Amino acid sequence: AHIFPTAWTGINERTFLAIKPDGCQRRLVGEIIKRLERKGFKLVAMKMMHASEALLKEHYIALRDRPFYGRLVKYMSSGPVIAMVWQGLDVVKTARLMMGETNPADSLPGTIRGDFCVDVSRNVIHGSDSRESAQREIALWFKDDELICWDQSTESWIYE
Ligand code: GDP
Ligand code: MG
Image (cartoon, rainbow, N blue to C red):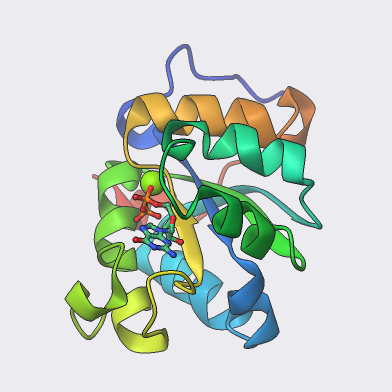
């Protein structure tokens, strides 16, 4: 009965977010999900997983020549992550704003990284940096049938 949108743009834009192992260890899962939910974005996929080094190497492939790449993959595979897909108008850009900057020291209070962490290598959340990255990362972390197409009854109060 659900009609899939022909394009993942406009109110159907999607992004890939992941609560990193430190976010899980520090019991920030509920707090982070709460912020995105309250904002008005729609959760369309979520799973807890212990990501493999192979998956994380591919996820962070653009950073393979950076000196911290190996440590980054180790950290990200050191415990469970919460992998999620969120949907909504301008969700890629807005989720990045809600996360704050890569370095928590540059992140304003009120952002997730600004409020909950201090070290660039323990910055609690990942978010796609562009629509193209979102598409690549969603395909890497999720199968098509893990993405839920659903109508939220509040939608007409969030969008005109
Ligand atoms: P993001 O998109 O804001 O997550 O930042 P990047 O894509 O540039 O980097 C990916 C992740 O690598 C960051 O979230 C950090 O966890 C880590 N990272 C980035 N820069 C550094 C750094 O200078 N040192 C270390 N140790 N980790 C870093
Ligand atoms: Mg990035």
